[in-house]
Amino acid sequence: MEITADEMKVLLKSQQGELDAVLMYNALAKAVGNQRDAETFRTLAAEEGHHASVFRSLTGTDLSPKKTMAVLLPILYKIIGRKRLYPLIAKGEYSAVKNYEPVAVRFTEIESVKNDEKRHGDTVINLLK
Image 1 (spheres, helix red, strand yellow):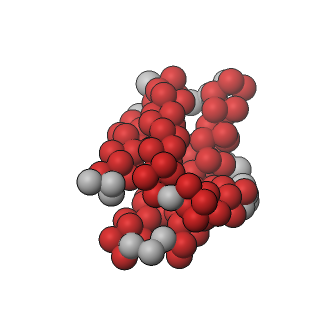
Image 2 (cartoon, rainbow, N blue to C red; image 1 turned 60 degrees about the horizontal axis):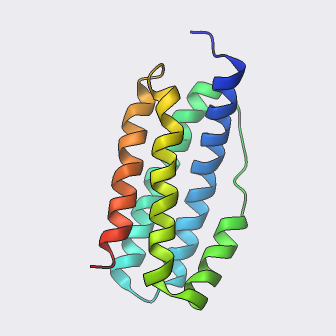
């Protein structure tokens, strides 16, 4: 199946976001004081790694994760706390769902990734309950 330039742009951006999320969640797992949160973040990091591989299989491109969010979010955790940070993280997961919708129609393997992102957002929000 031929991938259009616009689709490739979305796929590469998505792949990069998933790679970055692996580092981010692992960094958060080390930064948080709550063991349940840390375990959840390690699980999410592993799932994001799987998502990156799904996009990698489509793009055929090796990307390197960027550390920006992995550095920034643990600092934000210490400054604004989990009650304000976790909704922001969930919002990012829900945004990914919207970003994946146009390509999930054509690339069915992205549908499960999209569903996982919704669940990730819900999971992070539920840590506050």
